[in-house]
Image (cartoon, rainbow, N blue to C red; front, side):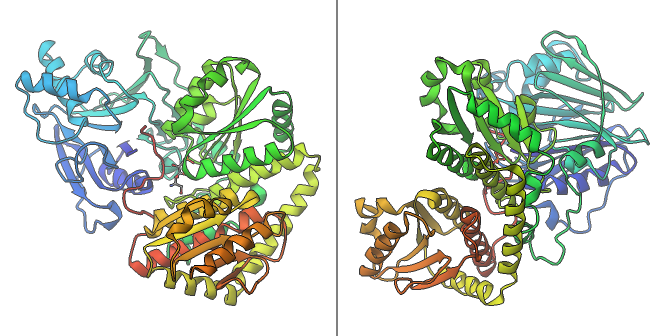
Length: 602
Ligand code: AGP
């Protein structure tokens, strides 16, 4: 999952650098730009994060194409960074996706004498284009040659080229691509709509199977369906409209926080009400869809899969047959989808709305007649377009790669829908959420509690492994807590049900082993206390996240003073601890190694 940003504007290269920084959360192994200067394409490429680059001298140009990379094929090197320049230097190319049949193309090109300089699947596309141009005796890449080659690629890809003729051509199939423009008739391409907001007033989404062509010579911009060859209407939507819808303020500074993640964790105490803002009617529609469904599925990846897992758990507790589907394991559910799928509903969570693993299953479900209810945090994303009913989380831009406020918003959405199905009144829920936000603010402001979390985090940095126990209402909270610890502080954290402990895992508990335990004041408390005493009996160190203390706890992290939404509050200590641990170890909290914010490749 990479980031693409292109610009036709005054100081185009500078604009592209700024745009790439705004989409760097999508991939930050390396970056590159191809800028048209006096009829030639000049490349700048580097390994590492753009935000780390100082004193860049921007070329004077009106046309530039840039890319930030998350490596799929080929190490993180300058040569493998995009854009890739054609041997004949007539075009440069960037790609977002995976060419699944690149090996067969590569061997044919090598047999044809093509000399590869990188180890990427991307360069295969460059080679195929050059061969196509040779075959058609083209000096400059034509749209028909670009389409012909694109149709030979297997997998979900978005490919953008810039030519020495001053043309930008983009074909999308899967990975997102939007186009924006402003009153100065400048034009921008990007992987996400929010990143363009400082540059554009209106935008449109390039759909899968379309090619967009912009000629800087006459500012002509056209979109064509690559299957039918028919021109597609170009209708730009005012960007402000979408941002209002998503209740997204473009305040994307860090304020006084040292990282976006730390800021976004604290924003959780004042954005939960946005999840239901102006959505009373929509929730009523969703409730009816679920009530009338023969079968309810929930679907997501990573953190989103834990939020959907908890949602299915809550629906089952009120007698609704809900099945959790982890997107990457969806194949085993296909038979279930074959009978009566037209009466089935799938609830899909995805903060980006662009996760390839998720969207691929959604497309399959739709083909079988399943109705899609989605909860997304990115306006104009693919998943919103695929949905029968789509909710915007409205928690504001989440720029840290690890999901915190978006995850909490997704989980809250699931709690709300099950509360309404159980008979709660919408207005009562608004009051309850408002009160919870207040309790959360008090909790964040409690220095004693916060310093205790920081101290425990510091001690945890001395360990390589930590176990996270949850159960019942807090089972998925345990899994999400473990993921947070893994992905930011790189500690090996294993989350599982406390009931599982004595069935094997306890073999790993020895003197001093840290075990994080999430305890709710519910029917599972006694079971949790038994598990905690089993851990203590073997010398394990129990770090317990609970409302009240207990002599069995080696360390106690006090939760906010409310029994409401304990699923939400029980995760926040792990969000904070992983930040403190990463800072202690000198890691990048917002852009952890090997990860990206939006996994647009399978
Ligand atoms: C979250 O902290 C992770 N970075 C990752 O698991 C993420 O939740 C997953 O990739 C799904 O992303 P989505 O919500 O954009 O679909």
